[in-house]
Structure formats: C-alpha cells, structure tokens
Image (cartoon, rainbow, N blue to C red):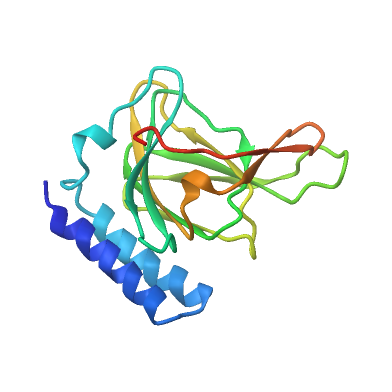
Length: 184
C-alpha cells in the first residue's frame, strides 16, 4: 500500500482550507488532488474495500480534526444503488475501481415528481463535483451487476454525522437521515 499518495491528498486539502480559498477554487484544486490519488490504485486499505451483500458501504478513511472535511471510500456490491439524496455540503467523487452511474435531480416542487437532469457514468480516474450551490441531489448506482465498484468521496464536513435528506422520486417529499460509517 502506498499511503504517501493518500497523505498528500489529506495535506493538500488541509492547506486549501487553511488558506481560506473560496468553494470554487477549493473544488477545482481539490479535484486535481483527488485525480492524483485515484490515478494509481495501490493505497486503499483492504479493510475499506469490502462490499456488503445487500448494502453499499461507506468507510471513513480520514476525518479532519476540525471536521472541515472527510474522505470516504464507497464500496458498491453488484447492482447496488442509493435512494435519491442530497449532501448539504460540497463533495468531490473520484472513481477508483469499476464504474458508477449517477443521476442528478432538480430541487423538487412540493408534491411533484422529481425531475431528472440526466445521468453520467464515472469510470476510473473520472471526477464528479457536487455543491448545494449548483445542485447536489442525485441517485448513484454501481454500473455493474457482476462486480464491485469503489469510489473515493471528499465532503466538506464529517459526512457521517451531517443531517441530510432522502427524496421520494414520485412526490418530491423528503425525510432526514444521517449516514454514519460502516467502520465506526
């Protein structure tokens, strides 16, 4: 395992936040840092790449001591999917292994069905940027029905304890949830 690559990612994000850059700059420069770490698949601990037979897994890899950001591995078993959900904080998603399909949604009108804004497939090395300012409601699925996929997510908070929302795609109603972590 090459932990130096991951340590550089953490240090880079810490420096960006210490410097007080605006969100746009943080996401642009942060995407470069994330792209560097997912370019070579030799650093993720085996314990943070284990799928569950029924549910996708969210493993905490790093939590900033001031909870300014967290780094998480998402491990998708074959065919697994999330409900439609938001984040309420900025996020970067980098594909490490396999592929994910993400479908973005518009903020729902009360009582109306969710409106899809389209889908995107992430392959190894691809990055997706999410922000409440530009839209962070989506549903994510393992693109494959016969293999595990793993993505690395960086969030602008301790995402395991942030109250977020799951949306009913038929009527736009939402309910609060807190995701937690599989390894905590």
